[in-house]
Image (cartoon, rainbow, N blue to C red; front, side, top):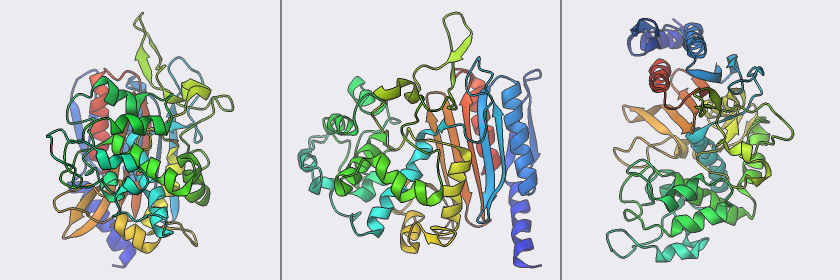
Length: 396
């Protein structure tokens, strides 16, 4: 058996015995489980799951892409761009990808490490002097300001949106899209640290805002400009941006919400609907992209930092990004890590903002990636969570 066939055999075994897909049956309320066998079969099962989500009214629209180092193998678009619309989602429809922004933002910042402009172990007070005076919740004296590695691995001690309900000011700092990035960072700095930098993991979207702001200070460029120059242009990601232009394109997905009359309408909280009032790039949470665009990024990661003959990330930076940074922590530099026998075998991240959802999964052993973006018809509908769990079970 040659290496290619052996790889496919391992993939079939993995999907057959580990991955189970749950498809919600509305009329019976039952969950059906079926094994998945190979790449074509995996895509067929993705297609079936997403199509059912559209048919049953759980999803408004979706995109899916699957591929390898050779490029995109399969793509498909589903549904419409927003509730009550007749405009179908296509390959160029932009979705807000939520926290799937984090690995893309982290890779962008890693290019500054490659160029020697930014040392990840250096405290960020070099660029944000105010961080030297940060206070801690427990009254301790701050040992030092956090560094970039800690910001990207969620160990900077900055408040988490997941640990407990955020205060109004904490929420505004990462959800008011009329702020500037500098405004957001100033508000975040007013919040006390929950631990000493480097001490413990606390998933923090606010921490990524500081990371993006440091990158801005280092380069004297807006993070959007930096992202376009360092990643999007080299990778051909033409539809990836923090600032989609609704005046130039109506092809932007929007999730649903129940109106006062009980009917589904487009969610008016979507960042792009602010138009020119949209100023805030939520670095780890508000990027807009397409499944095909993100597939180019995923293929580069599978290719150890290369896009065709161009080394977008150095091999050393790629190794750094995909390695475990702290013992027993399965979140690295922008990625959730699957580890076996001391090695990273897969990378993944999910995303959620309002009714936007996303999932990126990259299997380093099997040379395969899956990217899915979708919008929920109603975030309060429990079937949306069931769909997300089913999708994660399928691709992982």
